[in-house]
Length: 247
Image 1 (cartoon, one colour):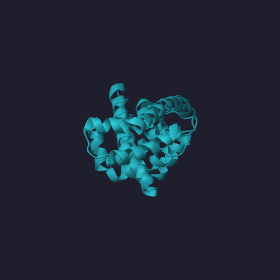
Image 2: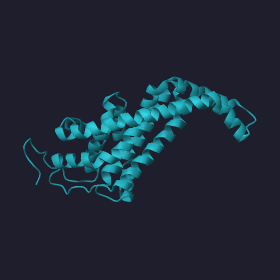
Image 3: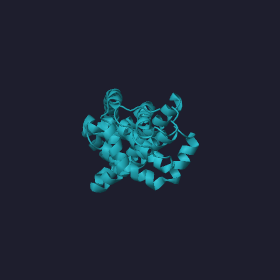
Image 4: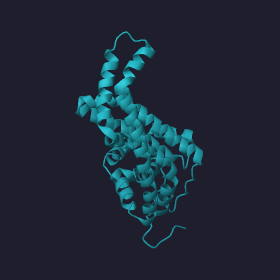
């Protein structure tokens, strides 16, 4: 696992990866700003007037649950767009990974596995759908886990584990689907759930680092290609030296 992480980090500084990084980081910044502003406004609306609207619509006779929820959301809204950006980063990078996974995976396979059969690029629609599903699931899970932030350290652990689970699922299946059908990729992930989850801890740590986390689609994809190769039993070929080309 550490070897896979080091290989992924080392290749991020290569010229082909730098080109992908510029595109990925630019799109991530734009999406995060737009999404964070939207999230902030929704939270602010609920904190100011949404509680009364929900109480009337749902016909609740007690305001205690909604009062507590409103209090939690008021705190979240007060944290502003910066906090929203941190909150949304895993979802945004997961969505972007579906668009850049093939470019990154091809570079990893060409350099580290030149003797293996190359993977097949994912059709744009299934790849985008995979990324969108992960992004929506991430937002849903984080909203459910939001009240846990009031529990100090426990809340941080819950968010970290949720991020590890979501990102490991996304990036491993993207890597596996280059060689398998979506159904077989899911089966392989479930059959190696503990290993994939441990790999997700690396991704959760990476996405927690400000600025550097803009490169999560590159690191996550490259990292999971190495993890997939080991779990799938693919032979590991000698990495190409500088100046060499794969046949």
